[in-house]
Amino acid sequence: MKTLLPLKSLFAVALISISALSPTKSFSAEQELDRVAAIVDQGVVLESEVKELIANIKAQAKQNNQTLPSDNAIRIQVMDKLINESLILQLGERMGVQVSDAQLDDTIANLAQSNNMSLEQFRQVILNDGLSYERYRESVRKELIIGEVRRASVRRRINISAQEVSNLLETMKAQTSQNEEYNIGHILIEFPPEPTQADLDAAKGRAEKVIELLNEGSDFGRIAIASSGDANALDGGSLGWKTINELPTLFAEVIDGKKKGDVFGPIRTGLGFSIVKILDVRGREVVEVEEVQARHILIKPTIILSEAKAEEMLQGFLDQIAAGEADFAELAKEHSDGPTSVRGGDLGWSDPNKYDPAFRDMLASLEIDEYSKPFRSSFGWHITQLTGRRMLDATAQINENKAYQLIYNRKFGMESARWIKETRDEAFIEIFDQDL
Figure 1 (cartoon, rainbow, N blue to C red):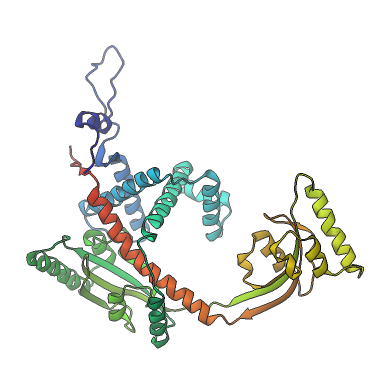
Figure 2 (cartoon, rainbow, N blue to C red; figure 1 turned 135 degrees about the vertical axis):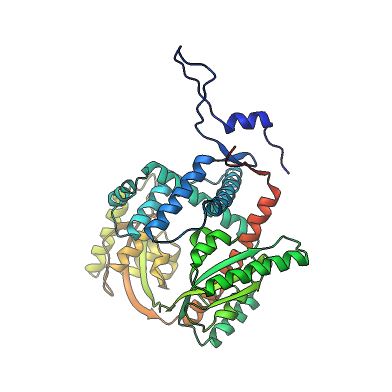
């Protein structure tokens, strides 16, 4: 338990009052501007934050024609979310995690691009929704910090052995439904860390009641928001699209090969009783991998060698090659500043996305055996020749990488839940009655 500000100081933060300055009015008149909804270690959750998130959830539900549970149920989930965010942001501040304006601009530009909009169009959509663009920017910054802190904190808790990857690869080969992805809904009915039999019976009874309501046609998202203790509760319990191997083993075993709409549970886990519903099923996409083969000569500008002189040198090399006066490989061995100079500049076969963006884009514009003009990358000035392009059958390597990532994602979800629970257990948290 951590020592916080004295109670007197906290109320100074919690209730902001102003006095009317007119001589005809009493100095005792006060107007409440904001109120603390919860104390979270050295931080607070403000009532205005709670109300804003609740309003956003209701607006989104209205837009999607989704029914919601009671205001009290929504508030409980919102408070949990804001408390978790406050703890993570405080941890991020102690860790020194920061997101620069340049990183933030890049992220928002990518969001706009993913929605097929220009940055200005994206900004206008935000304004049209009644949101402040600056507040939206800061909310994105906050999400980026939270994501980075979560990844850094949880990643070191995850260990994956070669045997685990091998076992999953064998399982993947044996799967008859490899081409399917499932959109899964999850509701978690929690029990205490060291439950008694009475706790287990009570939690199981609530879970069975939830299953009964779902089988009678109740809305899954509404029940998830009202009842679930899972981190995805405010998303209506949706876990998103996942292959059978991305799901926790207990879930995968019961849903494999089942149809849309099926409900399963209660499934006991270390955190409580889970109810799972298959919201939808779809086929898995097939991804082809292209590799390119190229060679290059790199000249790095220095205090002595200017940018213009480096570009001029490379153009001179191209002129010599075109005139038959020099060989590309020999020029690379003699002049290139890159580590491939000993191989005549040969880069071998590689995924072009591994290269510097400028280098990757230049290779994409070339035909086989074509030379590029001199161009600048983050490493210096280059000329390059594309010597080959092929579609690679990298199934074995791709499957191994995929198996590793699937195990990582599965463990990350479980460890993330444990991490935030441990973080909350170690924190001082006091939630104030909303009617105070």
